Length: 72
Image 1 (tube, one colour):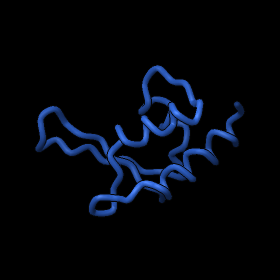
Image 2 (spheres, helix red, strand yellow):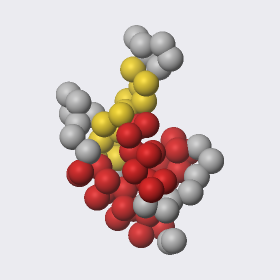
Image 3 (cartoon, rainbow, N blue to C red):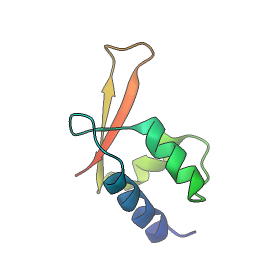
Image 4 (tube, rainbow, N blue to C red):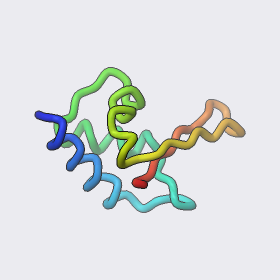
């Protein structure tokens, strides 16, 4: 799977998950991406290659911290 195919899958995935206060839990994204055949060791590391289309938020008031993303 090439870069543009992965980018397209990420965009479509983020438009299908209902956001919570504008943000999507990274765990939910990871589950769908794996089902769609995207393999990764660390999801945040994979997604950092797509910061031109997504932004990240880390909620540290919760333990363990929860990561969220959304389309720009």
